[in-house]
Image (tube, rainbow, N blue to C red; front, side):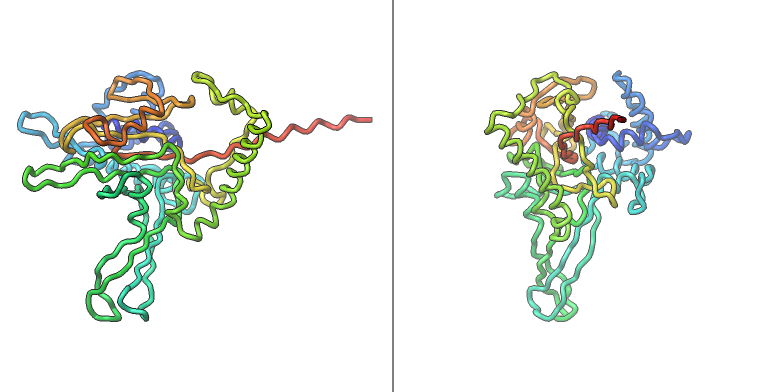
Length: 368
């Protein structure tokens, strides 16, 4: 639970909404989360007893106890899912009439799903929409990178009843994203049920993940056309930086400890959402904000830890309950698996923000 809260805190809009939430005087999870987030503003350790009690009341199975009388270890992805679900019904959307909740607005995406019968040339395709709050990265024998795990689910073969053939037939299911959320959650499907031991065993396979993620290949042609203008602006800025570097005009990279505002004082951040859809991502570009890891061999044992991005370049923080220590990008990338070290289980990506040079202020006209 602690690791999940530390990761979700990396969504600024979610954090702000919870901090500013007017207490309802209830013992519900959203009220308890609000109190925890307000207390965390002080930078001191926050005993999560009230939040734990609220979670147990909202999701009774999380209160199950083992033979020794202690609480059973719970799957962090289930805790993440339940917390997000409860916040979905407790936090209203902001400045949007397209969404019912803040969670749906900033963390929810929409998938366009097409089913095409491969055994009939006359049967029209079935097109539907599915909402999602996270993407699943399935780990197969050939999966060595998060991108390939996500792309593997774009096209798959399924069997279903065909209305035109009046029998089961093979269909090609194509799933593409038609709405990207500002904050994209990716779950590595690392656990599977092992009948002999009756445990959710862990897949330790090394699966790399990027600090910067481009969702372009996962999108529908419609969405690709919508995000192309912002992507072109990103390319324009990068091309200019390359040109400046070749001409010796590039600025030195900021060193550790330099505040971002000092580095970016000549740059102006541009909106990362579409004007008519606040909470969306208008470029398809993401930057990793948080990693929730698991160390152990099954979901019911081991230890969960949160790793969250800091404000300075190449600075992260390992949040192991109440012990917080600084780490680097390199150490984050070592969380890809392959052994008994901490292994990435849930990833939280935030929008890559386009920053352009500020326009010089116009000088006031002198009166003659």
